[in-house]
Length: 79
Image 1 (cartoon, rainbow, N blue to C red):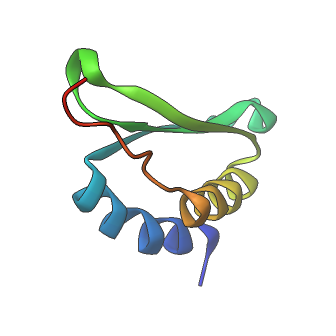
Image 2: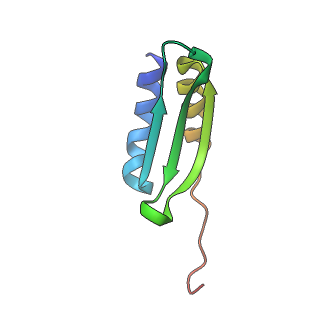
C-alpha cells in the first residue's frame, strides 16, 4: 500500500465521523515544501488539527500516523 493509499484508508472513516477536511499542497519544483493540513469543523468553527511538511510521501506517512493517534477532545455540555 502506498503512503497516499494508507492516508486515505485512515482519513476517510474519520472524515465522516468527525467532520474533517484536508488541504494538500504538492509541488514539483520544491519537493521539501509539500504539506498536508487536516481540520475539524467547517466555516468559522474550523480548527487545525495538525500540519505535516516535507516531501509528499513523508507527509502522507506522518499524516496517517497523526490520524491514528487523533482523538476528538471531549467538550463539556452547557458551556
